[in-house]
Image 1 (cartoon, helix red, strand yellow):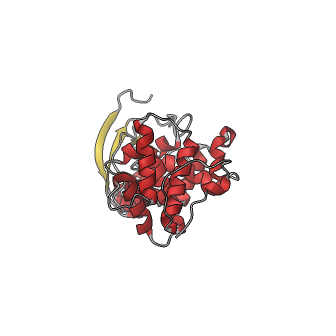
Image 2 (cartoon, rainbow, N blue to C red):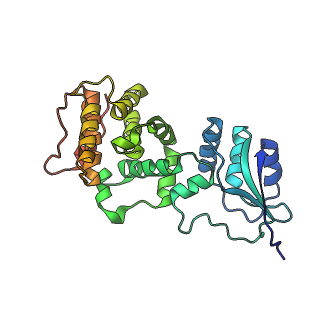
Image 3 (spheres, rainbow, N blue to C red):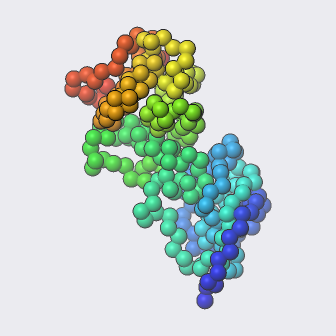
Length: 274
């Protein structure tokens, strides 16, 4: 009979300790190599953080859940702190999915800023994979599932860097992080110089050192004015504003104000390079 008392500790997991635990794995699901690589990179760059999700062991110290984190520790060569739960029933159902979202799955494996990363990866999926591009956001039947969102993040791990670049004081006042981070990421895909995307994001957030005809300034003013007037625009309109401001910025085009054109089409949602 499985013990009824669980024991939970916070422990240092070294690569050697991870190997010892993995040698006693039991009933473990298929290893996702891309996800291990993503976690390993996060650990190597110091972006992995302790959360409430635990590495789970049964009464005989057989691994029940946590293999991806352990493999990532070995792959990165880094030591991490992790919650470890002992005396978990060996036949326990580990809820890796069910109703859990992509963000919850990412967070369970220690991804920092998981909710924001998932939101940006969702937009990136529409932009790169959906036949209708970002216009697919208006088609609920095309909503990507968590597997698609996680696969997009694995394909474009630099999404995490864009989230980090845009997660600054003041970002919430200008529409939040996710949409700005998406434009930052998409911009880095088409520009050789990431500084262009960094300067755009900083300009939208702070408004500093910008002319009133610069794209970031026009976008910032549009968002702040809408907020002051408590105007709720369709999300597609706001996304268009971001893209229009970016395109004007990289092309050196003066932008007096942002307006919605008649007949929005896929061509209005293409992020252009410099």
